[in-house]
Structures are given as structure tokens and as C-alpha cells.
Length: 261
Image 1 (tube, rainbow, N blue to C red):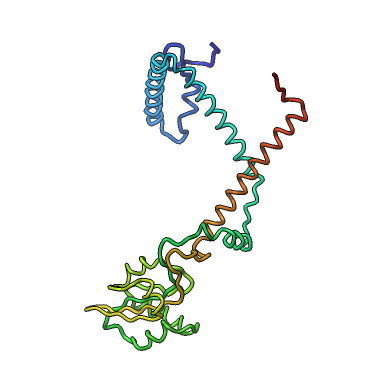
Image 2: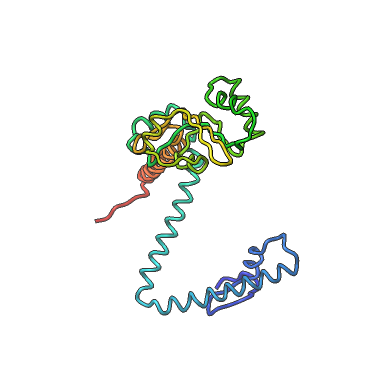
């Protein structure tokens, strides 16, 4: 057994050295905390060695197979770590809008909507809020000036609101904000561009700008981040394959590979 300094614990032939323990203790700990941390590490190491020794003894004939699995896992971990670093260095991480658009158009069958989606502006107001006639006009308007007036008004008076005309919403999320009842979703979307609803305390304005029906193709804006991830992952897989092929080819050129009958 190779000498490595002072021993702090031993279980059969397995030894824990002071130097190994010292390297595992965070340097920012106080003296007292360092002692407690060290004692905890020693107790954990002893427990692990006792269990490991007993496990090896009781596994018997199964031990070689398990050791082979451990060896395979260790090899896979080395390879994975090496490939990950090479991929980090070499991977082209720039994904253009054109590439995203092309992938979307070529794989639309993978982006089927599971629910109805829409672009909509809505406001929930106290029924006694001022300027309701103007609000009704502003929320349906497409002018920038009316949009600014609507935003200023919403900040001051709205209980809840969404005025982002470019944001896609799931219809079920809209239902959490607006009390729509007794409707067929598809018919509702096809036949309404503006809706005003009131209850005992509140008034709701909904301006529907665009929609996509369930089971149709998801709007690109809703899946572009997902597509970007898919493209990058495909690049990683391709690059990993190329790295392996080049390494094998290099080993062949250097006569490092031999085959035997």
C-alpha cells in the first residue's frame, strides 16, 4: 500500500488519509465548523466502506457482472465529459430566424395545437370606472395613440388586463380572467371580435385580434424557442457523431487499432 501521509480512519484494507479529508473541507469554515464537518465526513466514509465491503461479500457470483456495469458507466462518463467539452468548444450556437422558419414549415405535423389559442386584448374594470365609452373605443383601435391611452388607463384603473397585441394566449387562460359561460369555443372565436361582459361589480372588455383552432398548427411564435432547442440538439448529435468518426479515423491512420480473428 502506498504511503500518503497520516491516516484518520481505516476499514479493513481501505484507508482514509488526512490529506484527502483536508481537501474535502470548505476553506471558508471556522475552526469549530471544520472539526464538525470533518467528523461528519469520517463517519460517512466509514459507513460507506462497511456497507460496500458487506455488499461485495454478499453479492458473490453477481459481483463480476456488477463491476462490469460500473466499469461501463465510468467509461461512458469519461466519454460524455470529453464530448461535452469538445461540443462546447465547436458547436455553432447561432440559430437564425430563417432556419427556425424553415424547420417550422418542414415539420408542422410536430406542432399540432392541443388547445385553442388567440391574440386578444382584455380589461377587467370596476363597473364604476370612468371613461368607459372611450375605453370601448381604445381597446378596439389599432392606432398607436389609442394604444398609449389604453395603457395609461389600464395602469391606473384596471383590476387585471392584457394589452399585448402580439402575445398568443391559450383560450383556457383567458377564461381565468374573463367569465365567459355557455359557449361553443370554435363558434365563439369565429363569430366574435369584440365582447363586453358585466356582472354585479365588474365590467370586462375583450378584443379578439387573431385565433387558431384546436388541432391546427401552432403559431410559430409559440414554438420558436422549442424549435431553436431542437435545432441545437440536432447539431450536437451530428457533431458528436463527427467527432467519434474523426477520432476513429485518426487512430486507424496511426495504426493504433488492430483486429484479430
